[in-house]
Length: 248
Image (cartoon, rainbow, N blue to C red; front, top):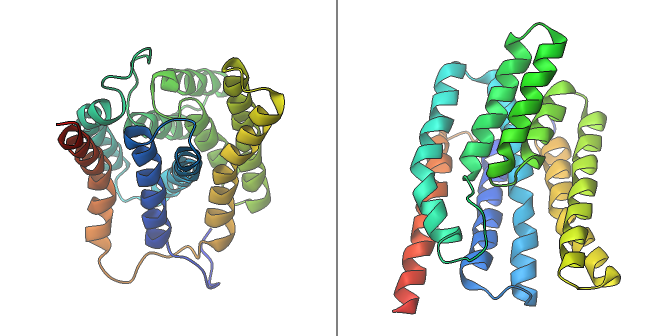
């Protein structure tokens, strides 16, 4: 996937994804559901997870130590759970227990391990299917793990990878339409929300497959690497603390 064309480097794309994630979480913590601003911030945030999925597959292919890569994901799964719960789940009645996005990424990492290590195709399919299924308790459940699996299957083939982004976007669109129909929004409004909600996924696919130049930033690589990990729990904790201060 390395190219010599001009475009966005990996760090720039990740910083963009962090901003869109922040907007999504601001919507969930501070804004009233159903308002225009809430919908805009929430839908913009759907750009982030598909970008994470792409860079997870790329990172697995190029990391010097897959063991250390997996341990970092597991470590930040643990570190992030309390801030995730406090910011996005505390006081929200009726929501089931949910693990954070690092949990989903860690399960997706194990899918990549299974694809590499399990030679028997039947058992490989069973293990990967179960790992996709266990993300049901994670953030962006099922969709992220399925996208990681599909991208890994056709890694290097941009057309097929973009097709996978399109398939995930279509499924997610139908998922949103179903949710809005259950909330009695009516079919036209539900379709509108579904189409707008999946645009972030399509934008993520276009960005990583056609605008990404395959390079990292020339400077500050080590800082960026750890900043991307730390930003997730840190911004969730900050949002929670600000929400507590506002309610005082």
